[in-house]
Length: 412
Image (tube, rainbow, N blue to C red; front, side, top):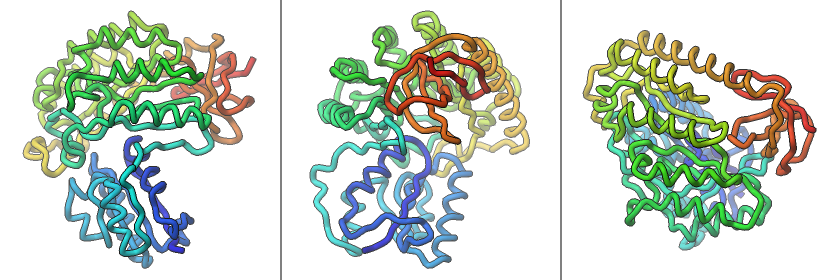
């Protein structure tokens, strides 16, 4: 038996693909602890420089300890020099390439019917299912396009079969993921995400559906039709809509497909049409052309919209991107701006969570939490920490307290 260990970096799509690679490993590969492993597989991410440095450091450390290191994922495409540090590298997370490489170390295995990769979160009833890889965007700062390429949507029927299979196995929460859910199906014709969601919601099982990130630049063309989907109680009132900047000039420099005004109108539409929605957004601070006035426009937009979740990223130059040709700004300024947005985000979440105190909601218990607790989700996907219950069951809960990043509830 060949003892191996595997680590995954980055997004949920990458995590799900890691799970897919594990499932097709040859029979004589035995998963073990990192310390005991002779082979280490690193499924990498290269979206930001900080993560890249962490992965390079990990490769060097593991090589020094005498392990065979295999790298897959996005980083080898973004920074080809990383390939020279490892023993082997895999093109993206291509299963055929993966097994061709391993065939020299082990027995071959046929992957002609390689299924859509899925990730079941540990000790939970939640399953993450990718619906596509790649995207249609042309953002000037993004290296994911270099690594993932153009959009490739998985067949709708295959996704439905995967969802049904996981529900039959006991899943109670289905999370759809990709680089951009909003463009699903556009590589083969019309946008099909609304059709896919409707078909999933029509499955005769009891479950909750959580949607991944959707870019406003593509979603805006069928936004009204999309909002109608939330009439179903199976769909969390959660929408991840990344704005990246509140400045029209910076958005243009970033080559985003939406304007700040369009994002604002969509955010208002969500709040006006959905009951107690949870809006999540992404903001990049310190883009090379972001002046102080541009940054303040981002802050002002956040103050107006008050998204419950704000994912903050300090701009990081990535090789091969258009923005890499621009003069970067001092890291000190990026840190200052990042701290300001983080402080504002925390304040918004505290105020929002305070409104829930004393109220009663239906919560789905999705997985184990820390210190023998349980993590449940409210109808809008907001996390609530509980002390009693069973994973996979829905319970009435009363919110007794809160922190800035979660609620605390009592089962009724």
